[in-house]
Image 1 (cartoon, one colour):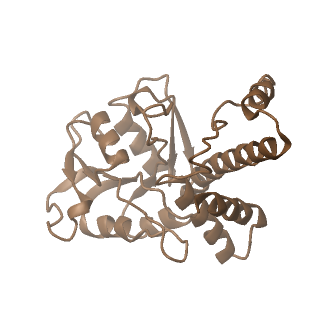
Image 2: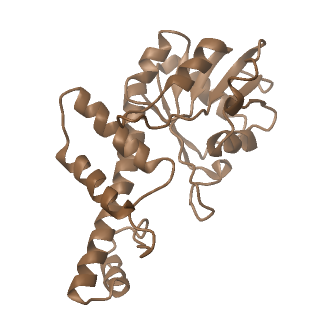
Length: 253
């Protein structure tokens, strides 16, 4: 790779826009218009895949837009930023060279990882020769203080789900104790501050919003449901994750 690699960003939501800010010289393909405009015909060195992977009616992850990009775009390396079900990167590599890079871009201004130019780590999942190529791409915009974590595609995919389920777990726990405080007549805000005095506890995700309970947004509900469905498909019906989903449904009614 050199400093003049040609880049294409497919998908222009939160992730695609953040990727464009990081690589402003990239071309853009707006996947929202995928049915009305043709895919680019030129070949690129790098294609960042940032298309949506929405939840299906059965709770599983819809990766069809990702496969559409891989099948219709010509590039030497595809860096998948879209959250995909475990095993997808391996399947995609049967089509074209792919690396999975989980995104940590939040939907709120207060999110600590909103600006990818300030990131301290990059996770890259796939064959080592391909993740090495991806590192060369990111050397264009990151200095040597950024940590590059190289995993298999499967490990990187699972890591992304692990983090989002962890967030959902914390939100569910805090909302549960908010209700316990309510029924027992205690002040949750005071209990929370005392709880957070323990240095082992994290302040992240401990706010409870009385009029907006549980976890919501584009990523967390979708990803918790998706990894539950993926594990169940392989024979593990997680009572723990199922309980988180069921509790959150009660708060969303």
